[in-house]
Image 1 (cartoon, protein in one colour):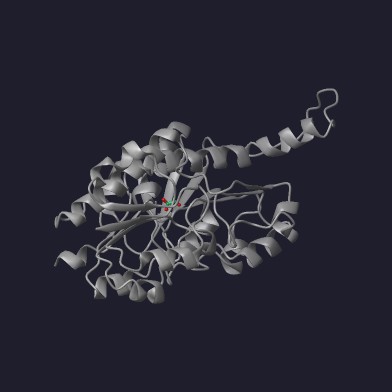
Image 2 (spheres, protein in one colour):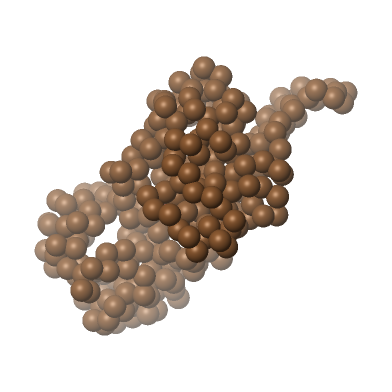
Length: 321
Ligand code: GLV
C-alpha cells in the first residue's frame, strides 16, 4: 500500500510500516500542497504534519485514502468531518507531548513575568550600566492566580505545576471537570470572570469554530493591567488584531506566544515591536524525546490502521462506532 509521509523521518522509526510503498518527502520543510495532492493519488495512508492542508477537497480527491495519521495533537488542519463521513480514522499524538508542552507554557510564563527577554535585549543592546534598583521590575509567579483556559490534558499539566508556586488556580472551559477540580484545587469560572480575576492566563484550548477568536477585545480589556497572557494552543484562538491594539493601548504587562496568527509571523509584524511581547516559533512540544515519541505514536497509529486495527490515539473515534 502507498503511504505518503510529509516530512523526513528517520528510517528506523518508519520500520513498523515496512513492506508498504513509502513516499517520504525528504525535507524538514513543508511539502508543497500541489505535490501533496499529486502524491495522495493512489495513496492508502498519509502521515501528516500540522502545516499540511488536508481540507475537504484534498481528502475527496484522495479517493483511496483509508488512514490519516498526524504527528501532532492538534488536527485543525484536517477536515475531520469529511474523514469521519468517509470512515477514515485520523490519528494524532496526545499524551506523549503533554508534559513538554506544559513545560514550554511555564517557560513562556516565567520569562514574560520576570521580563527575561527584555533583560536579554538590554544586555545585548549594550545598555547594561551600573546596577539600579528600578531596572526592569516585573511581576511575581508565586502567590498569584493562574487562569487556565481549557483544562484538557495540557491545561491540567500546566495547572498541576502551579502548586509549586503556591498559586491559586482558576479554569474556564466548555464543561466543568470535578475530578480535576479536586486534584488540582482548581475552581471553575466562566471565561468572562476568569479573565478579570487571574493574574496570569494560559490558553490551551484546541482550535475549533467555537474557540476561534475566543480571546478578543472584551477579554483583553477585562484583564488586569499587570496581567500576563500566554498562548500555547493555536494562533487564531487569540485575535491578533485585538491583541496588537491592546498592547498599543498599554493593556497587559506581558504576552508570550508559542503560536500566532498568521504563522509564521512576518518579521515586521507590529506585535514584534512590543518589547513585552515574547514570540517563539511554535516550539511547544519541541524536545528531542517528545518529538521522537510523537513520531513513534503516529507511525504506530498508521501501522495499526493499515493492519485493520483500531488506532491507539484516534481524533475521530466515531469511525469505529
Ligand atoms: C502542536 O502544536 C501539536 O498540535 O502537536
